[in-house]
Image (tube, rainbow, N blue to C red; front, side, top):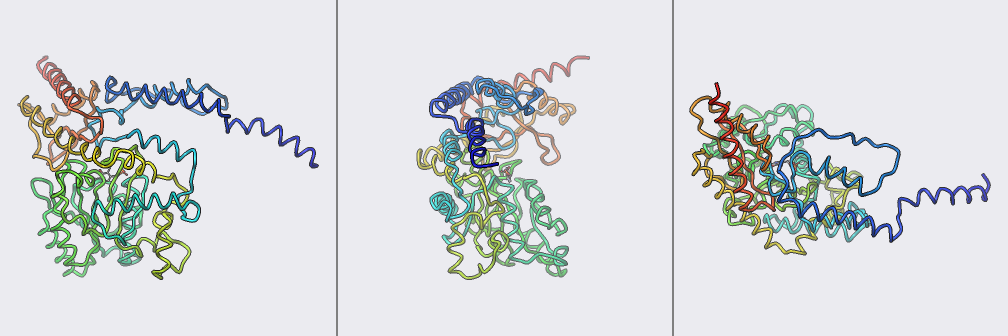
Length: 481
Ligand SMILES: *Cc1c(COP(=O)(O)O)cnc(C)c1O
């Protein structure tokens, strides 16, 4: 090709490739349609169901073009209105999601501007902003200034980073693995055991710490387990507690567990993915000792009601984190560490990533923290209200929860478990409000997890109505011959 041919070919290609970069008028038109859909979606949330079960239509990618309106419609019917509606007030299953609007706007701006947030030199502002979010988290959880942290995709990846640091600090590798011991309760989230496997610690010894009637770790039993393991020549190194378990919302006695960890010089990890942010609420007392953890994970996409895709991890020992995540060497000098720690990529397995700082920073700066705290407080009260309503209608409820996850069952005279399963199925078929189930103390129970920021008293009233409606159906079916 000579220069003329190249120039001609380039001008041809520019016509097609330019479609990826629409002109202002077209951008406006696209934005208007997207904004209209987003507004319609949010305004309609009170009227749609919490859960819909239907087949997904064919969404395969075909090499043709479609209008944005048609594609948004497809998104609406196949994605947004199918399965659990996590943005709706009526998601009270598993751990509900969020979707604070300001965060959505932040994501849009981030995608448009696309800063490379992982390296300080590439985008000092983005890296700084992410670090300021981490600093704010340190202040909330009373972690020292020289601890480190980063924003992740969620609790699972945060856990990986925390456990990897613990592993490297204690040099749990090679033949040392099989004699090393991790202590956790049966109430830990399954991402905990999964993380151990992923980081090569599948063969460590896992000790299940005895728990009390309220599902809390018994610190004395933990201490005894460790003493026994040490006496047997094993190598205890990691204790995992949960600040808000997934199943029952229980906060383990963090301060007493920290005592045990300190006594034996073990790594103390706290999973606050669901419950952590309740430290900002009237339940603050329950979190005493959280600042004594070596590592802590929290999920802003749960307790700060942000859209899915943002977790956070805090770790006190920066060297332990850098050991795995900073790759090129010579990082052991403290003077260097300060520079290194400015770049999120040195603290995380991710290099190029979505800039998550703005989706946390913007809503906190726009609204202040007060509405977030009010929202957490509201969820605690709604949980109380829900339990009272259920008790008044003859349902049994689990023990008074620490936070906003609780459970209930109906005391059917015969086949209690089986009939509560039928009740759960009926509730899912109804779908007005989404609830999920669990097995707690060997009993099939229906969980209510109240954390969606849009959930209000009206939602709970609707849930109670739905539960009564479904109970009637189950009872009617039972009476048929
Ligand atoms: C949700 C949750 C996790 C996992 O976090 P993801 O953000 O889903 O990866 C871990 N621990 C607890 C207690 C949780 O509730």
